Length: 126
Image (cartoon, rainbow, N blue to C red; front, side, top):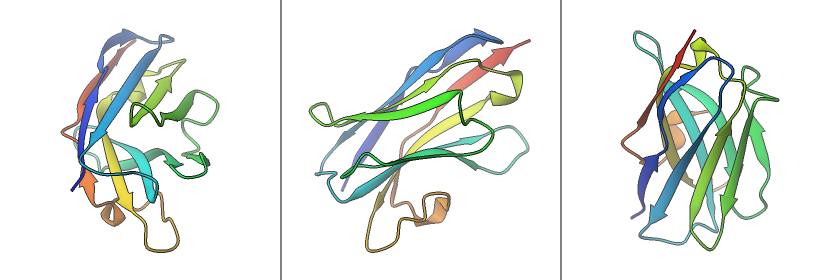
């Protein structure tokens, strides 16, 4: 059982930056893929970024490519999402998720993930 706790959300002006953290506990992550998803009011949850823990390979949604960076700290068992050049359309609740891999990593598919954090609100004002 893996527990995930997000932090780092808040209110920021357009063009600003935030760094989200996702601290994991309760298990080893060497065979996990870690993803960030977001959900805006009235919209479906959407994929933002993902990282394969074992190799550090990263994947991004087109909407955030070049602005967001996902990374991990093995010692702290923490995944980060550095968000730069934020736009009002980035406003959403951001969720961290862990996929206990058993084959291909379908990183964009939310129902493939086994564990989820509680979410952290990011609000970008114009």
